[in-house]
Image (cartoon, rainbow, N blue to C red; front, side, top):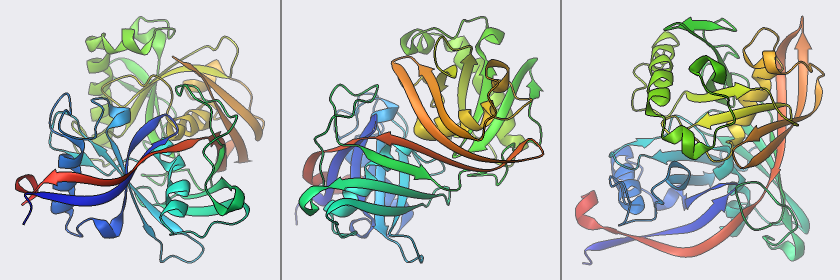
Length: 360
């Protein structure tokens, strides 16, 4: 018997994140055994993740687990896992919209969805949140295309567009757009807006922490006091809405907002202990919902309440765009469909080898 275990996977970039994509059937049903395999595969816990596939950065320490769905009208189930870098923790509470972009191509590559000529529609259920998502993947000659002319911020090369539509994003974890029941809460003397649309996110004014909002992600990651102060409020809000102790959980996320130069709004997104160099897709939807809701902190920097159109977020490395279809009743959002166009790429296919001693 070999002292290493081999597990099939595709190593892919989805949007501006990357990680291994597994078939659920290739992993143990037992959650503890599964998590041991994911930790070993990624090289955690270790700040460098030198002994695994992880990239020593939260956007490169992610895993997608995909299976054929048994739900009518759904093609595949997508289960996301955030693997903590320096602690033996696998968090499946949040989701990841960037890794989601690779789910459609992966499902076609692994035969879960039959490719159609030209374009293939893949309907996905996000297991972590219950959201329904549609993806349109380019499949000329019934093969996934990765070459294309689409450029996205945070990725150096162009790729083939994958159209993504989030069908039911409001209340992804709490069943409420505003989990506390308030559009603005005040904790530790700081005002914030807690919004749950595709991802629970706590939004703060950058100026309330004595910063401009123009800072780079590198600068913000060096400001430990800022991160600590925001996290204290995040932890308190987690308790208030029934998440329990979120000290070691990646949800809710955190974001700073300020006035845009050219786009709809400027923001810096935290995951939550470090600042993203771009912007999470799910976080983009939460920010759009917050800005489109009168009376929130985000709406102070944005005043367009039209139900449809494009919403542009200025972030450290460029601009992220979300296309919105909103239904209002009495000036409140009751339904939200959000779409974006990203690209994914298959980087490597094969098997990841993990030490048997680490998982048995």
